[in-house]
Length: 235
Image (cartoon, rainbow, N blue to C red; front, top):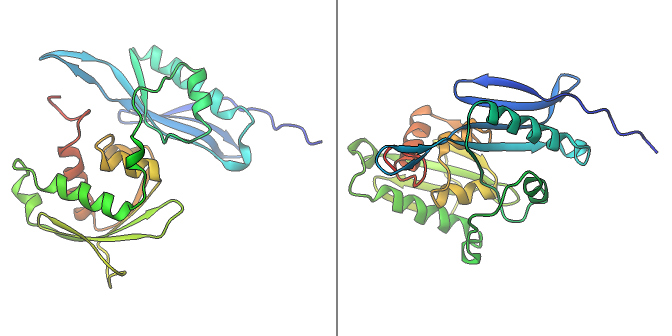
């Protein structure tokens, strides 16, 4: 019977407002998460100092060794020292890690209804994007825009859509060229579609990777951020 590899001490690195807490072994991260300030506004001037957690990951071959527990423990110590009064975490509803989160005091505050399961993710994304693009307060530079989009979800075939002005259509087949490609999990995908997370937040937390023209990425990020219900200025 092989011995369990020794646990390494979690380290903290900083990039702007983001903090990244990681356990490393042989120069590689084996378990990590990121957090950043996501304040909740209360009334006209009040504010609750909230830390938003994202990018919680442990390498598959190093799970069940206690690394994620140590990363969470160190992260919460850092958050307390930095003066945060609350911590939030958005996840899927069917992941094993919920047991770990509850051990650290996290509770479920909202669950997506069964009707929002990804029976038809292309239609879900198409309707979500169309809703975001058709608001009266949409800036002019986001109205006149054309982009072919590829979305790769975990465990499924890629989706292809085209944004043309304020309309969004699902393409029946792969286009000759795609302007922007996104790779993300299904829980992150749902978070984007239902305004629970922004693209910039997801990218900073390593929840989404993108390839393509920066202009299209910036425009798509702006569309999602404009309608975000939790984080945007003034809420």
